[in-house]
Length: 296
Ligand SMILES: Nc1nc2c(c(=O)[nH]1)N[C@@H](CN(C=O)c1ccc(C(=O)N[C@@H](CCC(=O)O)C(=O)O)cc1)CN2
Figure 1 (cartoon, rainbow, N blue to C red):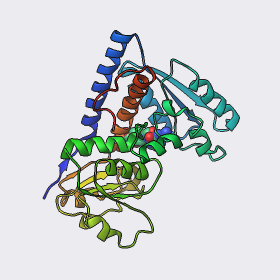
Figure 2 (cartoon, rainbow, N blue to C red; figure 1 turned 120 degrees about the vertical axis):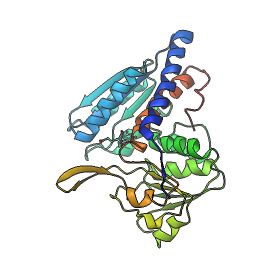
Figure 3 (cartoon, rainbow, N blue to C red; figure 1 turned 180 degrees about the horizontal axis):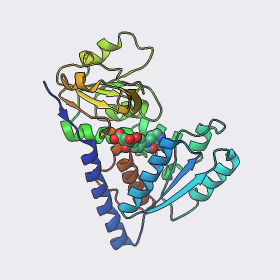
């Protein structure tokens, strides 16, 4: 079997088009322009690329983009003060603090200082609780993107066996909640899981989100299963730098029914869903109907 390649880049472009249509309607019908503020602390090279890309795409879909770039040694008090200012700015509907933060900053404290209704990352403890109890929340961008691609490929996910490999707060846990919300039977596997290969072999859907290059081989995959690869790992091979996922692409693609590539799979959906979340937050803040198809 040769898997269908789920093209995240093309999917993300369609999501951004939908977002742009909603933004246009918000402007013409209500005179509202959604605004997204992104805060970057320090000079992590990958984070700088992601933040630049977020700003560019925010403007492309017609929204206001505000970027705050702070020195790596910024104090926690100064960062919290900036977030407080953004929480109280009526022009800003979404706030995102780029992760990872420098070590001296308390990530949980910073995340939980963002107003939950502006938390377009969906990381605030209130949003985590709302998602976990099946209530309306802001949903983390990467898992939301994975869910959109799975729904598009399968239609209904009801009754499917799903294994999420990885238990991070950013991807693994919210992904499991979303799959449960769509009536999958969900297993969260991690570094201490016994017989991981056997657990993965039972799954109709495998979401690999561990951050270990090519750790899932094709012989762990049930024939016809869907593999969603969240990993973005930079490795050196044959003297060249290469980006690979958590799944061994060639061997998995030979067995799976469908698979997301790296690059060009889940990654682009993360930013598209951030834009979607910003429109959703803006609609909620203004008591307007939420954009259809852009939320969980
Ligand atoms: N506050 C947040 N911080 C981080 C998040 C997040 O969702 N919120 N996620 C990641 C980084 N990230 C966005 O911030 C992100 C990662 C990857 C991509 C992407 O498009 N990747 C491309 C490859 C790009 C490359 O060459 O490096 C792909 O997979 O095709 C977009 C956004 C951690 N921090």
